[in-house]
Image 1 (cartoon, rainbow, N blue to C red):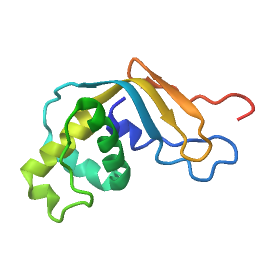
Image 2 (tube, one colour):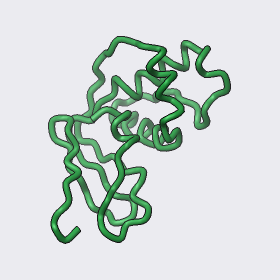
Image 3 (tube, rainbow, N blue to C red):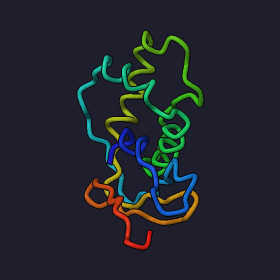
Length: 126
């Protein structure tokens, strides 16, 4: 699961009012190079919940053993900063959670991630 995907997922368990952002509990994380596309990154940034991306990046950075070096707030004029766009591209498109789970911040319900695919299906009583 790429962190771009994580940024768009939320818990839909009954009764949950704050199911976002999901907490990543990764047991396996990989970095796979993806061709840099600055136009795509620039178009995606306004659609992201920046603080959730930073939180996810910090969590998986511990697993990878290095910092992703992203600022805590979105920088002005980011579309003209190639270095910044490359950093966002790396965390959004190249870092991938292979195994682990996503945890609802309110209910604690865990959704497994297997082979890079999060299973967000609910049980009938949820």
